[in-house]
Image 1 (cartoon, helix red, strand yellow):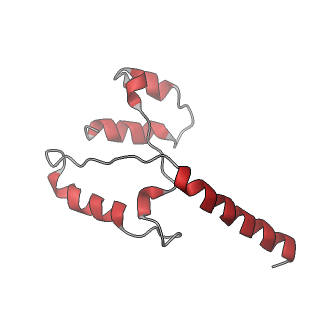
Image 2 (cartoon, rainbow, N blue to C red; image 1 turned 90 degrees about the vertical axis):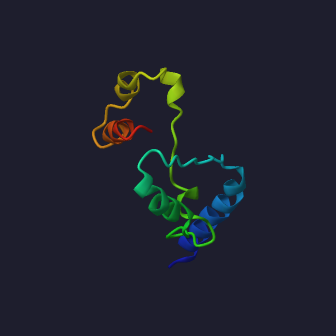
Length: 100
């Protein structure tokens, strides 16, 4: 690897290290009334080590949560904002079907 590429990679990691403490934190609450059998595997998945950044937990980086309260419970209004196939449409329908 040449020096400019190495420097760019190093700077990217420095930026990540500086940005990480400022990232927002989401509190996850697991309700055992919904999919009781899935609670423990989901918790284990979230709390295991991140596959790439071993210092962090698995779901602490690289995920996004959407506040659906802005859409007043209207799933169609949210889905209309996401037009690209393979993005939030299928995931949104799956989450709604599961009661999230």
